[in-house]
Amino acid sequence: MIGVADARERLATLYRRKLAAWSVCPFDASSPVALGLKPPTDRKATADMPAVAGWLKQWSAVAVDGLRIDWEQRRWPNSGTQSIPVRLAATSPEALARFLNRGREWELYRMRALRLQSLAPQDSEAREDFDRALARIIGKAAALPQQDFERVFHVLSWLAAHPDSGLYPRQLPVEGIDSKWLERHADIVRTLHVATGGDPGLGLLSPAKLYRVRFLDPRLAPAGMGELMASQDTLSRIDPAARTVLIVENLQTLLSLPELPGVVALHGGGYDVRWCAPIPWVADAAVLYWGDLDLDGLAILASLRSVRPDARSVMMDPATLQRFAQLAVPHDKGLTRAAPTGLLPTEVEAYELLRAQGGLRLEQERIPWDYALTALGTALARSNNHLAGRRDGAEPEE
View 1 (tube, rainbow, N blue to C red):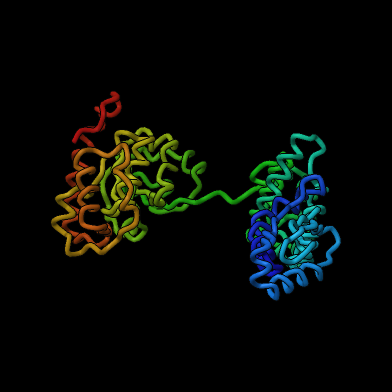
View 2 (view 1 turned 120 degrees about the vertical axis):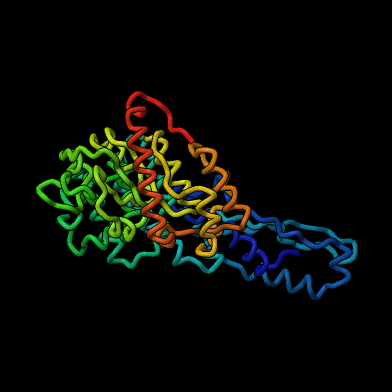
């Protein structure tokens, strides 16, 4: 026998899983949510009549609009004819929510879903796409304080009316918001704006990302500026005529580099390292990459090689790892990953060695500076020898 409390527990699991979808597209009496109540047999009723009587009393007391309990006449040889509840059917999510004592939650979800659906496109196919997107974020929308929900609605309305405003986020003329508000609620706003056919960027401008550059050869420094931070577009407009571009993973390494003839050094920015590849003077130069000697550093190198196959690594090999292993620290991130495509044989060997030792990280700053500068000097000399070959289309050699 399934009692009232047990039925609530079983249906609550389904309700929680389906709440978001139902709030956007509720089911109705033509497709009710049903649960069989597993009525007792004659033998069970005879063996424990008080329990059966209590079970019948429970279900007799249930009265919720839209909740139907199907009763059947059962003739039991030992107990006579009885009217027994055999099936519970909720004809709407609202009825189910009330049965589960979650009526207020349902009303909130449904009201907010309806409000947001007023922004949906009229085309039936586009509206279906909108409803699917709404179901993904309605939980977040329902969790908002009322004032923030109203702001979400007004921001979406404004963006729909001004899809290509070209404003910065702080310039949005919607009461009660600022750039931090938009950042906190970006998932809801962006998801629904895109679902109405809007641009993922919301038609707004964002400040260009700035990258740090050091001109290690003073003769290459534009207007004598040995160091600057600029956007990719701005850096594309200068031409320092670098012979070699040295990309380093960590900022303190970049700041520590001495003067080096013909060299411009860039802060790689981790997995964003490919940002520099389209810059014309970078494309014309030989490229060296020096990152941390760990699985991430080698994966970043492989990512760079996807746009600069000729890029050569510095101090990212087994010999360096073994020589300074005492300076490495545990780092087990990514141990299940196979060596990425794009690494040279010695780099793959270093990758596998790191994995075999349970994960290590030898940060580039930890390598003794005298040794690092000597290794850099050797790599730069080799880079100069290979520059002509790269321009002829030659692949990097081991």
